[in-house]
View 1 (cartoon, one colour):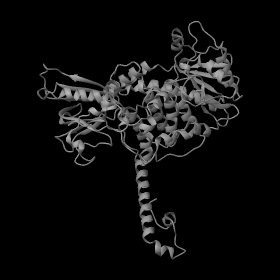
View 2 (cartoon, helix red, strand yellow):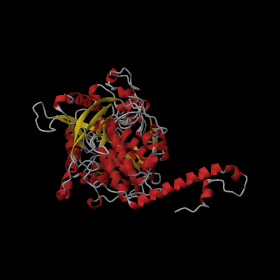
View 3 (tube, helix red, strand yellow):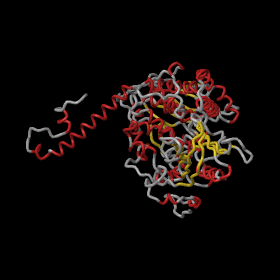
Length: 602
């Protein structure tokens, strides 16, 4: 049946072409075969055979909505069920053709961005593959078909407003800014200085607006050095930017050199400004051929240049591809360690962590301001600054603080989420795709394993962020920069992932969290101390026993639940007996007072 109803916030006439079955007209949650969220509409459903790589063929039915693919098996009890948000899909390919004769040789192969692949077999005589392929392709890759992301059709509402989590001015004030050395500038208010930077920037007080414009002309993409974080005690700062446009001829820019010297002078405790170039030395030299380069110590006399040897997006993409090949669908136990080593994934994690440790240590112990950049300043730079800030500032180790960190260092400063993830784009071979943000989250997980009481959030919090990095259910990670998000009215027309998380915050709490102010974390970044994140990378492999919850943690959670139950029951008892209690002045009047008179298991 055709429907002329228009989803919320939809101005595109193509969105009215949803094919709906009669069940879509039923109330949500009533007589419905599949769970759906508000705004989710069934597009098509067909009988298929799921080619499970672990248990063999499973007969069932596939349901495609404008948000997800949902499979429900028919032969087993309980039935095999799973769902895949369409944004997670990277590639859809037809398997077999008209001449295919083998059993289950005709159907669809689906490659996902979250380390799993799916295969569905269909009967040739039903001619159902064409419709499923077209519907999946259309709604998995909306940007390639003139459609909007599901986030703009999502009608979920939450009591918490995730868009209010991060306010740039509030966050800078928390750091004691502006002050005598640093000022807030609105030179980029309309994104005219740099179209991939946020509208509000913090720069040295002694640098004029004209200075900033001249420096921008000498930095790739106009991404000038700006403040990310300031140490409130020693006044040293973490600055981020892009590479200087030195070129093969070794061009110099007096304004850029002067600007970096002003940055050095802001805390007055060091004679050298340390510049951390995330790239390997050879790559930085090679970038001169395309007009880029690095700060030579001849030109920047008061600066020290350190290369961190972190490889580019293409190397990281290939590394993750190799990792996926060894974890799904089969894990070969006999060669596991050598296979894992051959992916170089943990080696890359080590290099990123090592670089961030150097940045954090220079700021905290060396009391020196630092400048961090890679080529364009939106990939490796974001990894280094955000991880260093996580090590230095305990606020970012809380749930809301981590959300602020992601909003600030990744989203507002123009990490190209759309290009790196390929949101809604069918071009799965796009060379711009790379797991840069995944690497960052992996590094955070490594830190949480080494410091189990330092983080307010748990592993599930990190996995949830990664799942919705791809899902397109929320507007948080859509598009490449703040300018485009404002143009698309993302804050007005979509929900934030932080709304969902902060409404259900108890699920993401680490029961062992101990709040410690001003504690700097220095993780051990050696291969002996790094682990493969099994609960993320191998979670789809049913043959691998997942890492079980810590029994102490499990018991602690049970005791917390028991305590909450006692408090609830005592509050109910207090309400029931309130007239009697009010008549006796010596009776306890609060649940906590009552609790002191009741024996509990803890």
